[in-house]
Each structure stands twice: as structure tokens, then as C-alpha cells.
Amino acid sequence: MAISSARTPEVLVLVNGSAMPGVIDVETESNNHLGANRFSVTASLAVTGYDVWAGDILDLEIRVAVAGAWTSLLYGQTDQVEVDLGRGEVRVDGRDLTSRFIEARIEDSFENQTASDIANVLAQRRGLQAVVTPTTSVVGRDFENSHSRVTLDQHTKLTTEWDLLIHLAEGEGFDVWVDGQSLYFAPPDQSASVLSLTPQDCSSIRLQRLVTLSAGLAVRVRSWDCRGQMSIEQTATSKTGSDSPRTYVVVKPNLSVGGAQTIAQRLLTQMAQNERCVIIEMPGDVVTRPRDLLALTGSGTDFDGVWTISSIERRLSFQHGFTQAIEARMPAWTAF
Image (cartoon, rainbow, N blue to C red; front, side, top):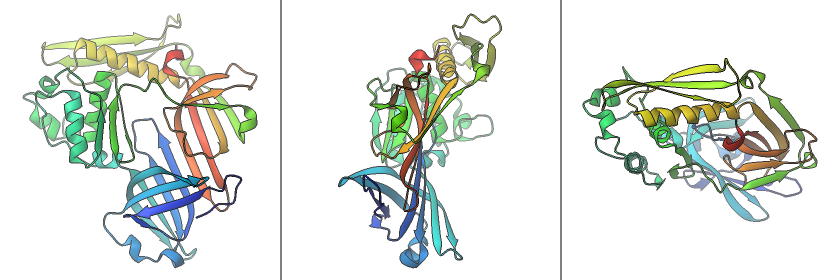
């Protein structure tokens, strides 16, 4: 599908490796919220036919070319197919390969392995390449003599492999996400790309401030340390000088004192980052990703500065051209 615009982008949608004809509209949503990225594709039923959607497993990849260079925006699997006979269209919705971990129940107890060992095992099990930073702390003690807690889901929130990966990442102060056909398990990126914008570069800019978070925050993490056989409680508080910060209590299983403090500080940072948000609509590109930085200048407000991109919604269609909406929030180093 070629779209009429200044940059004349082209779209190629591959279903199980074969090009899908008749594409009318493509939407993708990418985020850094520890959740799956999503896609939606609409095509002409008269061109594509129905048989292509009759399979049980539909791998789908969305590629976009600007000035002749192809870039893969999203690789995933189809969750739902909807045929609109009146409009003569078929709509396909799905998620990236994060869905493989989300749909998989925990099967093992993972005794005496590090967090990176477990991430490597799960990536291989789900057919993804592992881009994993090695860790040294053995987490097997957390699960020792508790096989049913991990493999069954009656008494724990860690019911899926994705839940487990998030839990391990929180304990290490890591980030975890899927990009294409790779699982990333690593510290937050300190060398992110920067997208520099002024109001003149954008179709619209909205600046939001959540007043309820500006009065101070405290996160209290409670846990039970199986190794030391004792209860754990650690608190992280934003440095606002407030005598009565808004307090959130989180319960996590099997943490050490250090692990509880790491999670409390990370959750505090994540919450504080939501105090301010920049929402931008602009022409689309194929290089900006969640976790990149946005440098805003020229707004004439104290929102000018550097922001962390938290989500990007892209749309490519004959009617709307190639556009994207970016949400960016306060970076971790300026959250307090």
C-alpha cells in the first residue's frame, strides 16, 4: 500500500511470511508499560479473500518503507479476525510476541538459577532470541520448596511467564520487553536516541499535569523473606518536603531487604514520572521507539526539556496518511 504524502511511505503486511494484498488501514501501538504492543490491520475482503484468515496461527509482520528503506514496525500474532460483509472489509487485531509469555503458565520452579538464566530459558522456550544482560544473584531460594506456588496459580500473582519476567526484572532493577523476535532483559537504556521537536514540527501538543502527585509520594513494599524467615518492609519517599505524602502499599512475595528497597524505589520513580505528560500528534516516522527521549523546545512553558517516550500510536491509511501520536513522561532523573 502506497500512501500519498510528502514522504510517500509504503506499507507491507506479511501473513505467515506472505504479502497480504488489499491493505486499507494499519494501526500500531507500542509502549514501555511492561505490556504487549498491539496492531490492527484492515484490508479489502474482495482483494484478500477469506481463506487466508482461516488458519489457526497467523504470524503477522508490519513493514514500512520511507524513501525506499524498509523497517519492521511490529512482529506478532493475530488474536482476532473480524469480517464485515456489509463494508467488504476484514479487520485483524493482535499483539507482538509478548503474548507468547502472557499466554504461557509457569511450568517450573527454577531452583538455583539467576534471573538472567531464567530469562534465557523462557526466551528459548518461546522461540525468541535472548538479548539478556547476565545477573549474578541466585533466585532459586525464592522458589525452593514452593513448586506449587509457581506452577499453580491459586496462591500467587505470578501465574504466567510474563509475570515472572516482570518480577525478576523488578528485583534486578532491569527493564524487560519484546522487540520483533527478541526478548530484552537488561538495565534501563542509558544511551537512548533523542527526538528533538518544536511546536512547529507537530500537528498538536497537549501538556498535562497531575496535581494529586505533586504533593509528595511514598511507596511501601511489604514482603516475607523465606531465607531469613522474617517479614520485610521498605519505604521510598519522594523528596518534596511534604509532611503527608500520598502513600501506596505494595505486597510482593519472597523479597530480601535489598530487593524490597529496589522495588520500592523503582515504583516510586514510575509513579512520579506520571506527574507530567506531553502528548504530541505529528507526521509519522519509523525510527522513534518507546524508551527513546523527546527533547521539546519552544513551547514557552516549563515543559520545555527532555522527556521519556512512553507510547507511540501510528496510523497509516489512504484517508489519514502516515501519522503518529506520542506520549512522553518525565524521565527518571528528573522525577523528583
